[in-house]
Length: 282
Image 1 (cartoon, rainbow, N blue to C red):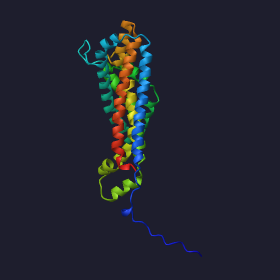
Image 2 (image 1 turned 135 degrees about the horizontal axis):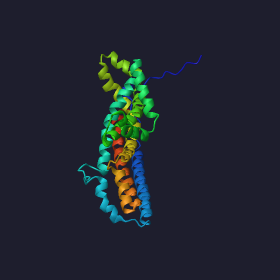
Image 3 (image 1 turned 30 degrees about the vertical axis):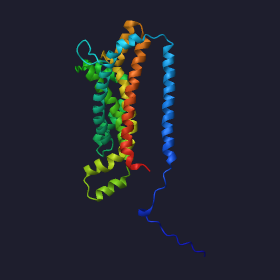
Image 4 (image 1 turned 120 degrees about the vertical axis):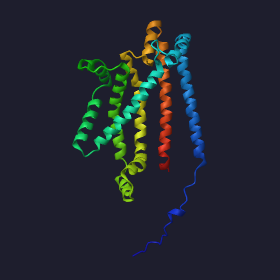
């Protein structure tokens, strides 16, 4: 029988990483430059299209401070994009709390906690957000529960997106191999330490991308509170459009502001993804 050649294993400590191709960084930089050029070309085409419509840019300049929320509403409260960001920020906080509690209930062995979590998630994922907004603001007063427009919008957004976020958190936690948790527990680490320093950093790699997309959608869906008369960005754009009969200028400006705010959210999401993915790059 032929003998296999004697192969000496290479110690892992002495293993050298493969050489880094310097062209990779040059290609990556060139890719970013080409992408930026593509964006600039497309933006110039969009601006060229709008310039052919005979838009009144003076009207946009006049109403822009109100749309951005740099001016207060007649009752002295914030309005425009500033109110949109306030609603989104408050909804994000309550959404995170609801999503975390519901995810824990979905992974619980307690039938009561599991039943409550699954019922809540099914109810708010299975009904439209618009219907939920109207029920909370218009129908609950029939039961003696009267809520303001701002609180109704925040509650509706939080309940709706909390149900979706719970499934994202649950899938992220379940993606962490059980062996890592067991190994950490075998080292004598407390369950809280294991959850914070072992499970959470790995789960966040899975949770952040879809959660970031949901929060961007929440920013845009906050326009639904305009149905309740709040002077947020969408409400102001429609109001100025009706009063001036220049809908294109106002709605296009509102769309541009929403787009800019979404880009800021995307950049923040990208930084979080890089932050929690550093330890897993090859």
